[in-house]
Length: 289
Image (cartoon, rainbow, N blue to C red; front, side):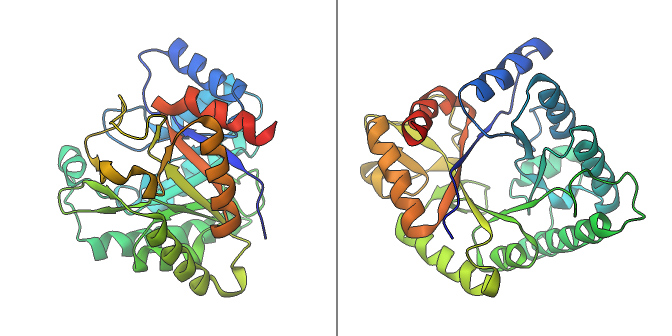
């Protein structure tokens, strides 16, 4: 099954209410389908920002991109997600991850679990949310039948196993995380292997679950580090075109690359970071025009 293209942007910061409203309206006007709000300290809190984004826009969906599941009580998260879905008339996608930044847990005064413990918490949280959203007695009751679609992000075997069990959308990080929380971007060949493994885990659901990919940067010149990209993200800068999370060349080159990725790997839902909002709009126009 070939999914239609969908395009998201992760908007993480704004100095004022007016600036946030303007940014959200600009994303919708440029043709983006989803506004995502990251879950990092020092950025806007996801649910309040999503609610204001809903008021500022008409059609875009709103996504937690993605919540650090070990930081949340499943029962409280079910309440907040159901409330947001109800009050936005069903525009929420609930993004979940295992968390990777130990320093943010430290800042929050919460012990940083092991990788296994974080993935187990994610698994349990996703299961609890599914049960809550399916319970007709759960209040508040979300607007979408069965609750907001679950978007689960990951790359390793255990995370993909959690996604295969629970997710409507699987978000490929396109990177491996080291012990210091740095993200090392991986190649298209590695991503193809991960997707093949995911499809095996999905079984009969393979092809029906949407696959998202985070595009870390658009590189019109093929090299260099764009302003706004965190230093936590690294890659082989002499072979940028081999990395699945980077788009290289002209807008036409980038559009053709995305068409190839969708045809070969089934990736049709692409998310860019805030600093690529305007550049990605030119690619979207080519793919839809």
